[in-house]
Image (tube, rainbow, N blue to C red; front, side, top):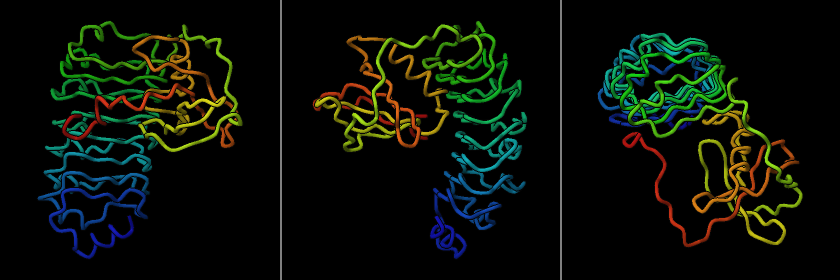
Length: 297
């Protein structure tokens, strides 16, 4: 990223539509970015030391996607609400405590605030007509804004590992809602550990990487002289909440022709990582869908 930063400062990125400064040694937004105000659509300033955005950030009139995950923001910047084209906002694991109403862009479609310290959300969140995805797992929410009852385009809502005493009844009335994750809230008391023996890490022979998702990496492994797949979770909080809840649900689901199933929870990883052992899918199977993009949301 330092090479990209150097090129930006040298004026070598004129006309750029995307700029990835993730991990760069930055404590503030480089002013040279505003030289891209007529073209820049995607900006990543994650894993930097940037903790605030300047007022002139709204000059980025064409900016559609902003990632700032891992940067030490304590509040969602109000200036985002002045960015007319901004539709995808990602501030995961920043330590955010406050989400001002002014920070919600008018064209907001995709809001990622996973793994922060947010206790309340602005009442007008559901008034963004294009809103499709809201990811809030791992916060301190004890209620959701009633305005979300009118979010007719909302397709995905992740509120796992919060402090919700119950789910609001209006969730069942949302016409487009297809994905809801809520495990790990106080009302979630029904999950029990399946009677499946744990799998020792020492009994696995790690093979090639098979894929990478939002919450973990999947590898081919050999276990008891048979091929299998291993999902290793990254960190203690995923997009859908706590790894242990996801694993418990997979193990409790048991066998079904439309589920991949699970073979056991992996214990004893040398770095303490959580892992789930699963059957290896046949080679002839094909991927039905790709990862989401800025266009598909």
